[in-house]
Image 1 (cartoon, rainbow, N blue to C red):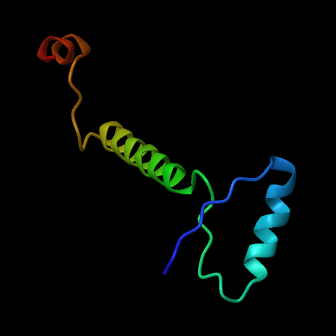
Image 2: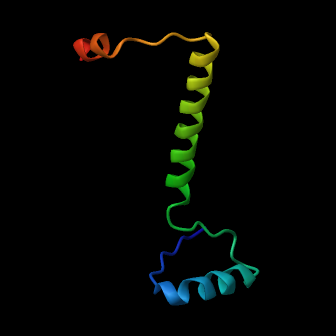
Length: 71
């Protein structure tokens, strides 16, 4: 399988994506920033889960001064 990178203007982007999706031989379209967004959302979710554990008493926090001293 081969991969192609195409640079286009913002105005033409949506039209080009629709055109590419309509081609039967195109196996997938990876839009710019998709992986980075998924990575960021994963870490945000992890942070919220950690915060919920702290609020419910299932996890403990470290005082800021102690944390900074360890650095």
